[in-house]
Image 1 (tube, rainbow, N blue to C red):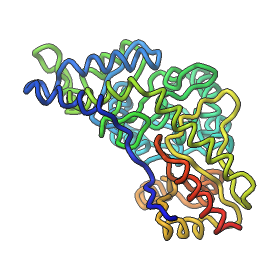
Image 2 (cartoon, one colour):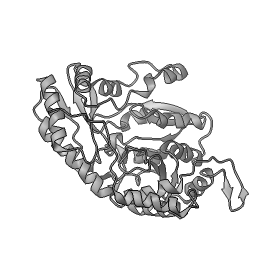
Image 3 (cartoon, one colour):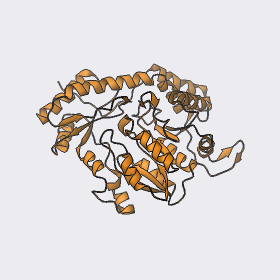
Image 4 (cartoon, helix red, strand yellow):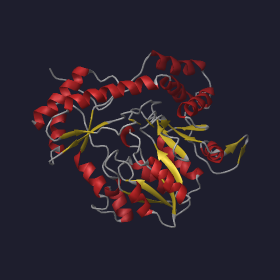
Length: 366
């Protein structure tokens, strides 16, 4: 028996369809409707912050929070290279300077010790990424470092909605945090994002930035059209109602992978530290002995879609040309990117599909 298994699928139900349909049938306020405020309130309640502001994408959200933190030209923002390129690009959007730090080898997030080495008089922000839906191992240390050096801590939690460390939700460690609602994330609005924060000052600035700097009937500062449509927010409200169910389904898939992959030569599943609630946006394995590319080709030949999340940003043509980045700058990051592979992951991935994937891995690796 063979399958054709995509890297991801969206999970939806009739409640999602009805939520979107109700806004369409209303015939008005497809943008800036009451769903926006409702979605923001429910997100803040779920994460445990005072405020939330939704945006038309995670990139817009991250751009906006950097603007709200008043990043000025040449201000330095410490970032990982193991991330989607928008994490780093948003620093350039504000004319700041991204400074790359290496990752640790437990959750593949920013290494606190390397971050300390990269701090200069120009550093303003530390921006860790919670890789793949797992909380960053050093997030508490990074909070302490930020406090000790009077820096801002912004969590890029794009893939980690609902993740936590000993019941403290990701998104509550930083001065602000961004979550993505892009199509394949933990919950989705098709495209979208949110910033959560306890800072009233950041919140007020975000509310201006999201819609052209408009306050009441006046325009008081430069802003953007970063608004999320009401239709998307309605879908988000419906998705949020089942977020813990979706996370549980993802964790069940990961548990099956972990058990079935155990003992296969040169394959190492990524197991989160004790007390870390990994929400498994992706399911990554480490492949030894320079066999990752061969395994990836074999799986693709057998219609199992898999990929590397992510190519290191500092080795893209853009960042090599802008900052002269070279291979060897971030050894842990580069080693991980040479060996990691993400297998299909979505809530309703069936056990027979997992069995087929694992059997193909076993066939190739022996």
